[in-house]
Length: 103
Image (cartoon, rainbow, N blue to C red; front, side):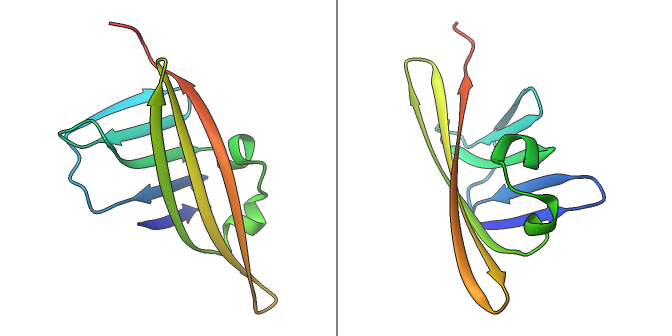
């Protein structure tokens, strides 16, 4: 997976290799699902608000990947990020819980 932070739009995008079949938006977060309803990618608008990571640090992100699980109609998205700060690799992990609509 690759992660890109667009500082002009203030959007963090993390996309995998899976082809997007459907998309849903919950607040400032857009989630892409593949045909089997696995998370294929995510876009977070105003990511500093959700992740507690400054925009300055997000600009230094070199790599990101996501892991997602659904349980009891709650989507747990874990985001793993790698930054390079003063020539040192720094890893950070953040989680986002999102309620899913019941059918």
